[in-house]
View 1 (cartoon, rainbow over the protein chains, first blue to last red):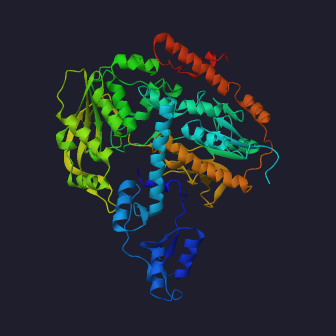
View 2: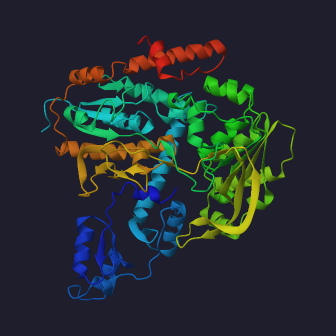
View 3: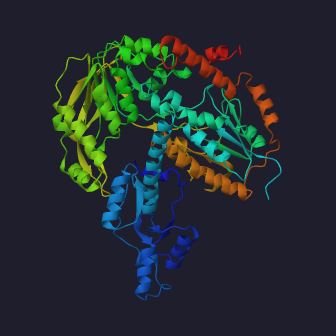
Length: 142
Length: 463
């Protein structure tokens, strides 16, 4: 299945912050929307990185003063980018292998959404459940 | 506090997603919800009736579960009633607390190549709707005097179409294929059918039972090519690390077809991989005569997804009939927000989203293919519809519903009668169903479908 399937039911909101914003702004977004990461853009609106719970926790562990830091200071810069047509199973494998949990998705250079490992697991569960459901009705129908 | 009147819900569409949603809504013990289902055609069940291949009768037994839902006294079916034509959104807002759109994905995506619209080149869904007796598609003509046909795509619709083109008249007679299609397909001159996959055997979407089934057809041999089913290093690695035994089996079956020898059957199904049509070429009359294919290689994207990349090698394939099955998209509903790029109703977990405010539109929901796009099998619509219904119940509990002025069944029935006197109730459908089954029994077939709305009206004594 394509990761596009996940994005179709997520509305068209993608939560983003600018590199220059205080870390607190990003943390508020994470908490308010109950999400694990936000996409970071520069002032020109280009993707520059991702800021996840992990980045914040690591900074806390290093005793950094979060009140003076900007999103740009803490974000992960090396980001793997997805396309709408990418295969969900392949993405799940890559996330597991490379230990990341959020994938920004670009369509012809434009940010159209973010796919989390939780979304991918749910998609796979629904897929299996759907197959079981179909088999169940077919055998009961005998 | 819940209001004294029953909460009333309208569902647009009557396919699997619609019925799974109705089922989940009606089984809420603490709520007495009423569900009215509206369907454009007189007959219910969407693609189970109009999409599932005639030679897959077992899959259609799922309608028994839907019929059971329809027996609930709090459920009503209004067939032959079209949203946007007989009933507008403003009408529904007057009569219902919540509205659910479950209208599916009704059109094909285009291949986007020159010659796509030549005579003899068709969307696969039109052919499917035609052989399944959908009243809107019975006027179509497919030139089955051609000897070579190509089906572009390797999903389950593509393989259904290829299989139906290869079935013998005897095999077809044992199905509920529409009479007109039965007659035309029984006279078919097709000798070779090509099924064309853009990527390799390890990426093909069809299931193992489907791929085994084409190896067991009465009067058609199936072949693949060794050079196209041999796995490239990327696919080999993906297969080895996936631990997916059924995928390994699929590749094995497809490779085994490369070593088969012709057994003298009348038709051949040739499954090709790593090719994409780049142009359809026609004769002076504008009829397709051949197809230009580019050979693809596989490349891995950053996310590990294996994609097709065109090479500089081309070939030509002589074909007189082409069916494209490269994806489906939903059709926008009047006054309902639509996402053009994805071909779905703009939504969040099934709540319809207003594009301007990015907030949910009160009382409007969606489920099934018009919500998530065309993916999965029939049963996949169950978890999908449950997700939507969960949102609906949350909003109900929070009092976030529409506030209809006339939320009672009798007023609604009067309105439907006024706008569409020839509407079909579920009892009407059951009558039609019995008559189709009886006609089938008389001919030794599972069912003979009635394929025009007028005939349906006559069969149920409405005209």
